[in-house]
Image (tube, rainbow, N blue to C red; front, side):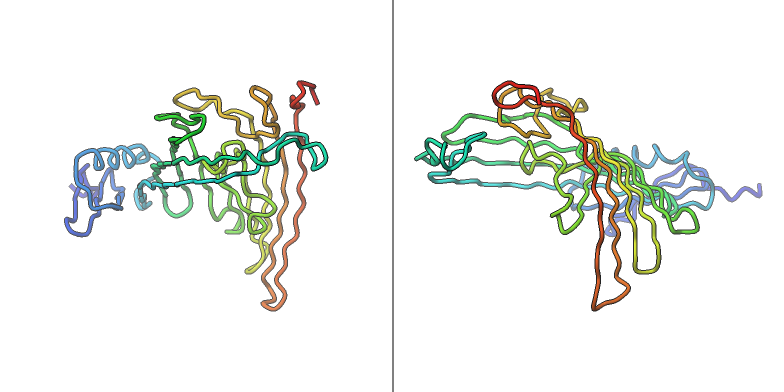
Length: 282
């Protein structure tokens, strides 16, 4: 008597596509992204909610969301220019291959997000991409590997609502992608992530300062499939890539004057020694 807490229960709103899990005074909403039915979706949604149900106290709101995206590429190249490592226009022997190649790429990325009281968040995304070649060497064969594409935590509106922190594997983009964009160039556009910690300081209403620390390894140990994909590839040499990258970034963005917005940045980068195409350690 006198206890207004709601016992553990799940309520579905039917046409609206939202499930609400009440657990110990905490209400967690899970929103559907697709019209597909089945117990698997709701099982996964319930697992997400239960996983964070113990993080908050009464009065805090936990919202979970999940989905999946697909990307399909059909790539066709006719008489492409051959990549010749460490060659110049004067020393290149055959700049074109004189043939064509055609291949398909299919990438799938299931993801899930949990936000607690608009101040804390957890986001995860898995990814897989396989390719089918028409008349070329088969790389990234089906089913290839399942890897963690994003996995980070958010701490928002700290220090008088001026500071936010994101830590973990995340996508970064600065300078319209011309300064910072792709942390894994070795797998082409399969992934873009960085293992990083990003801190955003709101200097004023229309200006921010981002401070970022990055650590990129040449191969990702957190995979299912163990394909040993070169991620930080600098030299096109089999087994010749072991380049570890570390960087620090400061990026200031000012929008105080509409007629004169500007951005300032500083990037420090450090690279480990790596094997060149001729086998020399640089």
